Image 1 (cartoon, one colour):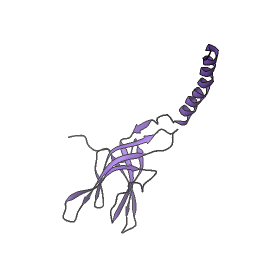
Image 2: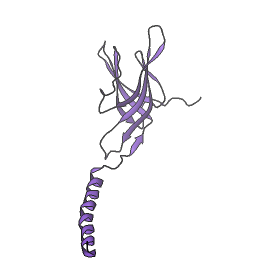
Image 3: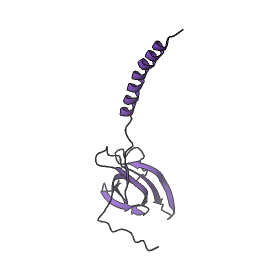
Image 4: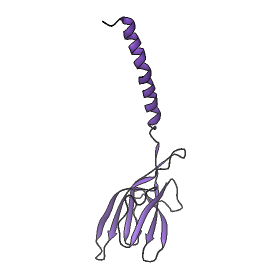
Length: 145
């Protein structure tokens, strides 16, 4: 039979490692990063034939044409300045074919720090996310719908 003194010793003996483990786990798991929703996505596009790189701003839910591609960002998220830069956007890219039909060639997340992760596959154009912004020199689209 185990005495009362032995039981309380066992609990105290086990409580310290468990408490230390909880503290280590809480330090190892980073706090959730504050995600900032931005009204503008900044892209770069490469025309592989001319070799020209163009940077362009697109307002969320607006469509901008780059060559035969139409780029439409749906959201653009960034992080605060004191956190690791993680800029991502959900975009849709359509191609205007030679017979003037619009065909979706990409729909998904793109990441500014890994432009090749979800690349827009096209034989003539490359498009990648550069940044998310709160303001732009490009005038905002009219909201007169």
